[in-house]
Image (cartoon, rainbow, N blue to C red; front, side, top):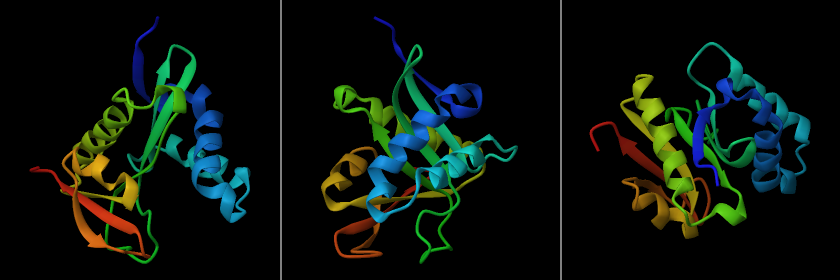
Length: 156
């Protein structure tokens, strides 16, 4: 069995369609957004600047998961930047530390790019997962009931 690797999507562009598909299905499809919107957003990760960036967990050529670092994940909080966003791990690979590894990779990348503080938006049921990784609640029930804005400082 191969080991799971985490790569910058710039280095593994063949996973771009899988990244867009999983993010779309998990977070955007129910609101009526087209897959093409996500495909375009994922393509922005191939730009020269550090943000946005996407990371992909993979076992050889098999997609396992993804996470992104983006400028803003909540339009009502433009003062908060950058954000770790769109964490997804394939169901058969969950509870194996892959999600934590993806969040760690994205966080380290954002700090290396110069961020002193990074942000993350989470539903209540996922909040303990992030808190166990060193994230702290910045705002509760924001931007809506049951949502939390979490924060992590470089020094943490």
